[in-house]
Image (tube, rainbow, N blue to C red; front, side, top):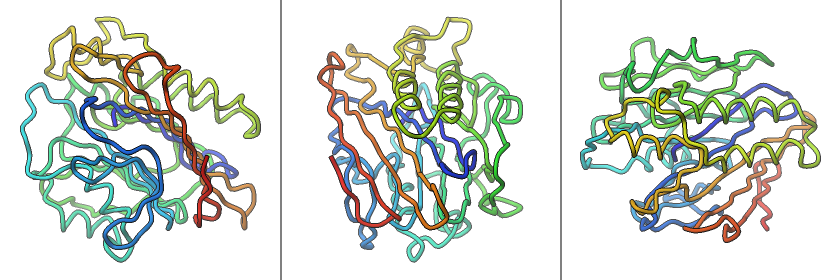
Length: 308
């Protein structure tokens, strides 16, 4: 997963709104959005990486959420473990992974390639960002505070993190706000991330019924415009490749790589005793978007889903 914008706690009737693109090699086998069971029996709603068995973004029936992106490295090493298991370990909780301190203590961050991991609990309102890479000015740009994250709206509790994170970890608790992740640190002001965050903020101003909120958000995910050369980060890949990766929707057929799927998720809570999660996914094979597939899930009260 390479591009995510998410808003937490910005509207009482929509505590979570999320838009994301997953970029991956075409040859990597993948299942689209669906409901499936983890080893501990917990039901999750997510796509599935068939090579390593994990996922890049998912929701659990208990209300947990996990989002994962890689940190781009021009010379990546093959690591011992798949990053996708970090997502499923959190979604398997609370029995298997009761809290973030337990995950930090039980996980060796050096066993994975560079990652960003956002963990949330929709029912408690707790959220945090974790990574095994420190900030790089060339890759990441200004810090979170300088990049325009909104931290307004109804107040909820951020996931409490230990005062001193274990060696190899960095991270932050996330109060209500609008955030973004690509292949650098949280809220790094890459042009494609700023575009998607702006579209997400605009969608939050629209009525939740109808399609006025959704269509501009989907178009932002399908945007193929690259950034200008002077706006490109320095992540260690060749400049021509950096430019191809700078658009929200990535097309690199010469590398067998591109945007494989687009996801829009919103958690609707029109009243204190009514709650549902809506997930919509567009899967993109190589070629024109007219060939993209579509699937959706609606989970009422975090219970049994309906699909289309």
